[in-house]
Length: 329
View 1 (cartoon, one colour):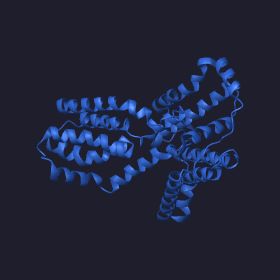
View 2 (view 1 turned 180 degrees about the vertical axis):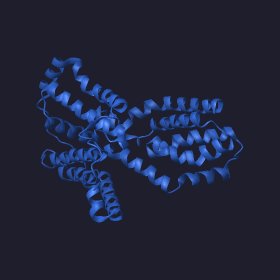
View 3 (view 1 turned 180 degrees about the horizontal axis):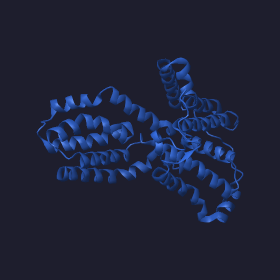
View 4 (view 1 turned 90 degrees about the horizontal axis):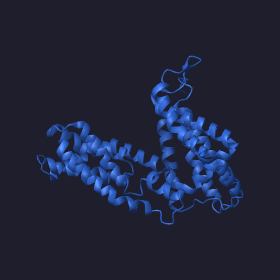
């Protein structure tokens, strides 16, 4: 096991996430109103194992066996989600009136805990690098942003409990309600980020470079820019994440053709390329955290309604990106 190098490290964050997921699994397992309580509990239990016991499995079994176990868990999660075996509690909320009274009493103060999270995260990122407790850094310097976000969430939760007179158990129950509402889409961003890593290791960018070389004239600058921007949008639509699409398209088109061959300015090129990827984010259900999760939380009857409203804007911004690349890059 790694020696303690900071009080709030990425390992601590993973353990907290795993503990919350395990609590969600237990609450689902004991909820008789959920018609699919056992399979729902199994889904979140399996998902929590990597967070809670990943380091222990590597220590005891080695990386290769652990990676195979995690791979099997991922396939089981896909089977449970694909077979529509996740459910939600059917218990009616008896505290609706109490919540309305509390909301009226607190008014706009209810927004304070939500605002505290980004504010504290930014302040800690800028000022918390040198904070030490008993000779150890408070925040993990290698994962500073994540450590700051975790501490900000804890402080925000504390403030929320003090304001509403609630308890941490209440927050866990509400977290379970939100997790049930979102369902399997909650883990999709993480899975897609892993897919991006797989594409990088598989050298998909080199394959794209070879394909473009065979089909497009390398001297056609405008054509390459259009392919790069459209490719960023399309790969993002497939992968659900512009950050996952970026290394593939950068290695396949931006770097060899536009930067090396045409001497394009890298800064505006990659910035506009990422923005083109975000256009794809607006047009795909694979970007679950942007498009599917809000629809689930708002309880919209049509879960694709958000995407349909975003498509015209996304296409317009994508065209503007292409024109800006031609002019600026």
